[in-house]
Image 1 (spheres, rainbow, N blue to C red):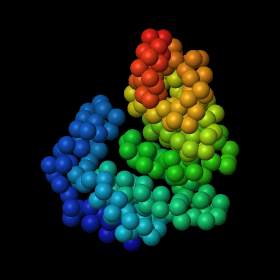
Image 2 (image 1 turned 180 degrees about the horizontal axis):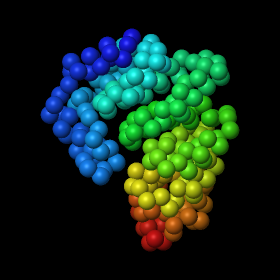
Image 3 (image 1 turned 30 degrees about the vertical axis):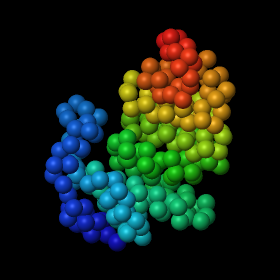
Length: 234
């Protein structure tokens, strides 16, 4: 199970036409958030199949994939890290994967790479741990580390712990990038699925300051009247 073998698998099923589409979809143009990223043009189900059949790939080989110029190689690396975390039975084993992930956060350099991996690895590890690392990530100048911070709270929300989501949302509330606005709104919407009153209390306090995109995402499941009320606060 080597990085070279996986890269050969990816190369064998590349689709240049799909690659051209993905370059536009993931904003790889000059000045965009994924400027210069390269694609094989492979769909997510195929990438998941490759990861599944190579799930015993060791961390040093996964590290090589993370530093590939190809987006799909990094995506497979993220999936393989998930496999390592899932099979870890002890806290030290989980911490090994968590620490590896944190050392390479800058290689999770697009929203899909972040979203597919951080909820289980970062959120899963920190569920019963000190969450200070998320606030350090939120203070980073790296967009992807900031997104990791807020999206990782999905796991806490699943277990009805909303405080980290609210605290990080307040910390990122003046952020300028749409990808953070969307992530914040997504996590707040998840809170609302578990506890509508807690979300409303947060919005009553913060809706005026929130980016419109974040607010719109967060109230997606509200009634038309409730959505109109919160949007008119802007």
